[in-house]
Structures are given as C-alpha cells and as structure tokens.
Length: 309
Ligand code: NDP
Image (tube, rainbow, N blue to C red):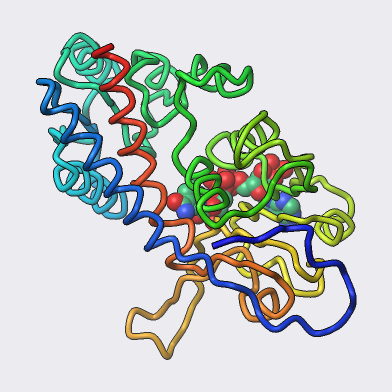
C-alpha cells in the first residue's frame, strides 16, 4: 500500500482507475492492534473500560451505541452502555458523568449525540474529564490537538481518515490538502491533524465551506481532497486533479426505488467519475465509516494506558 499523492502529474490523459482504500480491512487491523494492546494492559491488571451514555430513543443512535459496546467487548475491554430516558434532566446526566469521571475502572466516556433538545451539548461535553474524553470534543482536547500535544484525543472520524492515509502510504508531507467542510466533528479537526508535524501530516491545508467562492478552483489543485460536507455526490470527477487522493467522509441517504429499503447510501463524492481520475479513493460505505469506532477503541486503550502510567 503505497502512493505518492503528488506523484501523478495532471496530464489530461485517462487515468486507469483509482486504488480503492479499504476501510473495512484497515479498521479490522486497527481493532486487532487494540485487542493486542488491551491484552497487554489486562496482563498488568488494567482492563480498559469504555462507557457510552445515550439519552432518548433515536433508532440510529441506539444502533451506533450498540456497535460501540460490541466492538469494545470484542477488543477485550469492559464495554457498557448507560441508557437514559429522553426525560432525563441535564442535572441528572451531569451527575452520571461525575460518577463516571470518578470511577477508576472507566477510562473512556462518550455521550452519544444528538442529545434531546432540552439539554446543552456544550455543557455536557465540558463535564467529561478531558483525560476520559475519548471522543475528543472537550475544549482541552481540541486545544491539545491544535497545539500538537500528543496526550490529548483527536475526534475519531478525522483521526480515522489520517490512519487510512498513513496505512496506505499516502505521502502528505508538503502536499496540497483541501478539506471540504469546517464542522467541529470532522472538517476543523481534520485540518488541525493534517497541519501538524509528523507522519500523515505536514500538509499545506486549505479549508473550504459553504461560503467558499469557487470550490473547484481549490479542489482542482489539491493533491489530497477530504470531503465532509453532507451533500450527496457533490464532488465530481471534473473537479479533481488526475492522480489526486480522494477521501469521502460523507454518508448521505438518497432515494432509490430499486433498493428494498427505498434508499441507498452515497458519499459526498460522485464515486464513478472521481474514481476515473483519482489515484486512490474511499468507497461509501466501506471507506471512512468503519474507521470511527476503530479509532474510538484506539483512543480508549491509550486513555487506559495513560491513566495507569
Ligand atoms: P455538517 O453539516 O456539520 O458540516 C458540513 C460542512 O460542509 C459545513 O462546514 C458547511 O459549511 C460545509 N458545506 C455545506 N455545503 C457546502 C457546499 N455546497 N460547499 C462547500 N461546503 C459546504 O456535517 P459533518 O461535518 O458533521 O458531516 C459531514 C458529512 O460527513 C455528512 O455526510 C456526515 O453524515 C458524514 N459523517 C460521517 C462520519 C463517519 O463516521 N464516516 C462521521 C461524521 C460525519 P458551513 O460551515 O459554511 O455551513
């Protein structure tokens, strides 16, 4: 798995078709590493513990938390989910977080979003002890990411993108990286990760958003494009420089009468046209998606190691 993102110059000739970046395989490899690290910690008497808190009945969120608990247990951790009714008050949730913060057997705490409307998500995330905030959304961890302090936690989805780039040998050093989207969950931390010094970073990063004047101007000169805008198939092949690496974070439902579910999932990238020009591309599903939980586990095992140190 090796690629020099800028190695293929824009020649205008047809590209033979991009290498598919297999997020399922990479996530499996990361989870195997985590399971090995967990076993090592357990041998020293520390069982990494991840507690996910969910408030309310949102079906998609219920399914995400189930996957997180299952994955943590499969890795050998103590994984548990605290399910609270939608009527839970902010004070009750904060009291639970305080209890988890004080429990030395719990190393990672994640409060699933979205929270019910009567709760203030910003206050809730600040209540989690930064050293247990394995989701990486506490302002202390956001600050550490920006400063480049390695003992903080980066948000799992952008960290997963970086892991894909590293494991596929994509050279990011000095490369033009264009991040589409500036959310606190994906775009901003993605840019912060890629502008740091070190492997999978050292990029020259441009961040685009809905107010960017000419998106294609930026994407066409990018060696690496990371799309996280939540707009189905918006980035098309004609906006991509031949040989660029294309990472698609988007997960969008589009109507599809031919599918028994009535919809199908597509990314923010128009896959077929992009694949024809890119050197590497992530599919949706099966690209970035599986990396998020893998990185959550990776953060948790590090939280346990740091707590035991
Ligand atoms: P948000 O809606 O929070 O942010 C979208 C960003 O894209 C905003 O910064 C917005 O700009 C920008 N944007 C919207 N439209 C355009 C446009 N036409 N041109 C340029 N920029 C635009 O989304 P998220 O960051 O939370 O998620 C992005 C996508 O990634 C979604 O499809 C989501 O489902 C997916 N996702 C996938 C995850 C995974 O595990 N694989 C995890 C998290 C998200 P502005 O700030 O100006 O409004």
